[in-house]
Length: 212
Image (tube, rainbow, N blue to C red; front, top):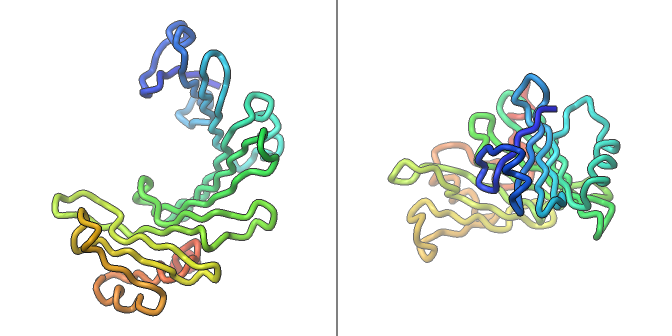
């Protein structure tokens, strides 16, 4: 592994400078590549958090045991990609509280890895989604060309839309936002030129993700 030391602002520093700081971050990259495997968050010589990026060929249980020897608090992230979407599964461990992790799945469009379209919490025993803890966002650009979450959606236990908050008419002023639910969703769709049916339920992926 290739090690890179950074300060808390993300600036690359030398090891000798890092160890003199109260807090720094240690990045591990696979040899000969820029593939990031692990980030250790270090405060006063103690690792207080770790982010780990899991490869397909790795044994997750072994990785969790390895990380647990270094810190009680760590996050294992695994990414899956399709032609159109990227799905990030995160397992957040806090061993001093519970041996089971908090599991979440986050979906991004492949051409926009910065803005999630769906975030879903997964039951760590049944591994089924907790639909009432799902959040979805639909994006557009404001008058200055900046992309923003123009519609934010939350859901009921049965996966039906509970509330869609539409900010498109006036993104800066909450009092002018519109609100829709499962039954009035067609009124929202009528305002949007693209198909936003994905946002009417808590389904993790849009239907086109399942089409070959």
